[in-house]
Length: 607
Image (cartoon, rainbow, N blue to C red; front, side, top):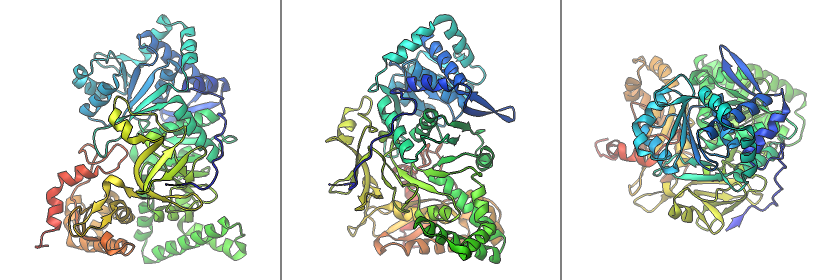
């Protein structure tokens, strides 16, 4: 196997000096009146100081101890991203408990699997609706003893406020200090259940040392030691990437700003909250780019051509800047005009304080990254998985290489096996899966994490991903094809939301497309048809437009990797329908099975 060629720098020291999450919270609380958290309340953002964070963490920890939940036992959190999620996790860490996050969008059956498999003793629910899910599956979770509700009240549950009050009455404050001191870095801090694109979710064990190592890797790579980062929190805290971002910020003394839990207002809130760093999944960046292109298109041919010119000027300017050369008077003047022609409006979407943005959790096409780079927004693509605490590689801020996922983070080792599988090793890698010895033996073998991803390493250590081992399509002619490459290219189109390629043991590839919801009114207006997804998806003129997009994507690939035929689904793929994971990745096997007739039709001779 080949490995990264460059020596690995050491991981930075923790800003708090903490070796466990509970100690990090208590040490961070010594920052006093500095603002740790800001959350929406009564039309404004209420600040929570580091002192208050420590006080609330201790109060929740005493409450959990007062319930009789013992150190090392599991507590689940079934809640959307909000300030109470962070406070409950901080309290659980101070009580020496193992946190088990549950996506708030999970079905009752999905909740049952996580709670029963992890043997959770308590669950903190967001509201009565989430408590109802627990009520439906509680008899299947014999270890579950306590239900806590954050908003309002619910039968069979105590409120978070009541939990705090009981803690004051029942638990000696010294008990919490003792519990924090007794936790070892090698102890499990959380069990994170994978999103399950290929089967039932597996419980990934992550230790305090794992999480803090990953946090230190990002801190060092992004040089956050002397910065007070402000991060807008809207990604699910059930996902490890958002939790690593949370740990980084609290360790270095930054501020977490929480969204109002309205997906339609995310961009408005980003501009309002002025983050220094923005972390999102590819779909968010793809939608922003599609919106900007649609806005230029709507203003007419002249505006579209002007914006295209501005993007080209921006691309050239970034190339010059990264080479260490000066733009010169003419280049600077052109760039100023390009900003007025549209680049500046895109940059303003992220606020005036943004230093850089990060993208992870799924592949993103290089054209999306190049678009934002031209607009003056550095979006750094990285790579990791739940089993590596969402850390492994990241593009260097000063030398990003679009199309790659960057170089190994400090103390992270990356190698490529003879069959092309990417292997990871380092202090951030999980020791095993919970109660799943066969899967642990297969994934954590020979001292390496076998990722299941395929890729290659450049001589200077940049990793490029080429697909998933289990997703490889073998056509009837024996060609091996990774569908993710053509799918990513198709999703660049501002008309396309999702693309799912099919073709295993078939003579050629076909593809299912879904339409970008924001593009439906524009398409309807262009062709004079009802502004309904079903009508637009079935219109032949829309299909002709999409054929141009498919042809454009196909031109980038060899014949065996090209899509010969496509169809348009007249509705969206959804998580509720079991077609998307909570992080919006397509469950390929589920889609192939559910829409078997759709794909079969694409191979019919009548077409």
